[in-house]
Image 1 (cartoon, rainbow, N blue to C red):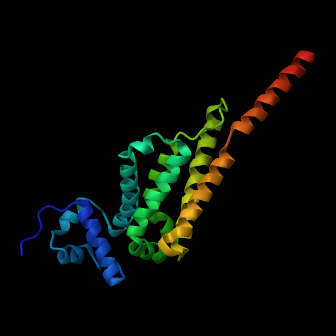
Image 2 (image 1 turned 90 degrees about the horizontal axis):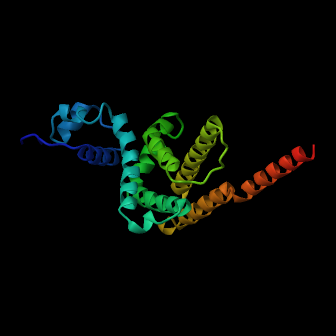
Length: 218
């Protein structure tokens, strides 16, 4: 049988996910993997340098597919930051649920090692960039270094929240993962309530007023 001439990154992802779910282990080598799927080994390296790179790309692909679906939704474009993030979560976990067997396999394989976090490194880059560009209202600190620290803290806390939700989803045994939906709604809303800077702005403005008044009195 002639070798497949055109192989895309999505083809390799599909072949890889099928293989690990059928065999409950990684392919022994790129050569054996390519031979089993009837394409030249060199085609693999046109897209990925290793199976680990494939695994990282799969989780990034879940993110990319989620964002693509949202961007093409006119209603999403009109949402504020809170509802955009809620929409992201619900859509992202729908994608994970559609591929739950693979996600459980991949994450459980590395659950007691640092490789688990490495596996999600590309997802983290994409997600924290998404958080950065979400338009979450922050305090105008009027100092570049403090602004950077504030923005970094929001990105990192957003990433931790996603990891906590992922852990909850992995352990969720409710029908249609209804408890995960509740967890998402409550956790995202709580985070935005905590980030609500309107009361804090009032305190800061009041503090500035008191300071100015004291200076005038002197």
